[in-house]
Length: 385
Image (cartoon, rainbow, N blue to C red):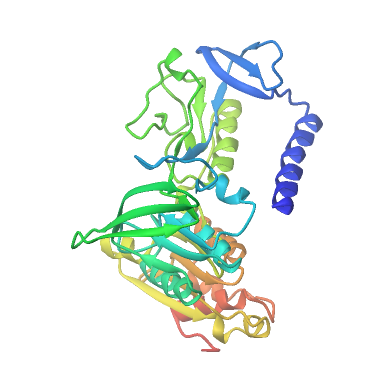
């Protein structure tokens, strides 16, 4: 935990240094709207409030864990993704509500640290929105082999602290059979929601949707053209790198009148072990769209670097348009998947074909050769499998 805290402190202080280097004035505190051109800042140190007037305003307040109705979080026994990263000891039994990315990442971490982990998911599959069906099945198979238990198609009825334990009442969504589970710690990981509390956004009357997201147009503008919104507070996947791209684009719109974010080329990474990463369309989405396609796969078991590292779990899967060979989606499970996906993002951004990738030289021995071989398998045939 000290290493985690040191890393967070170092990174946040690094941002402060960048502010100073670039002559950016910043205020540590809580900001709220007075009107559409004025923000009131209440400093964290308790000093006098500051009022700032601005020609342009960008809302980038992020998100917070979505609460589970009827379950009270204390960040000690019943925790969110914040509390689970601040535990003082490894729980013997950890129960997790939610089989999405955050739930699975925490399941993977604490299982490797020695916890007996059970993941409770209402749906019949894990991984959440955006993951390819084949990768979702592979993730469940791999994590189950590592000792993680899954209760899919299961509804959580209640969760409460009783003495030193947490009692979780669940119900099978299909047959209605009820069951009580015991855990030392319960993690609630059912998603995240936009964080706008305290912003006093009602003072300017910008539009919100049913999920609490601020409504914007294609240039990130609210109904006030000078108030823009980026990141988790508005539409799209709740990913830091997506928010970063939107931040750049929003400023470009303010300064130059045009900006660009390709939402078809936003990667997702699940930091389990092994890692899972994807970009573009899933096989299910392509089928539903009626597009004819080719699929190429290559296992890390046949990759020399993975074999040398004794880390051969997983595959690279590439999907390309059958007629044009243009890459439509890339899905990776395996070592360094989160790094390797960047090549796939570049391929989709520039409209590359699987043959373009296959004919690009990749260094040997590297894990990235699995990416090249999967591309070869997509338009023709892999060499080493």
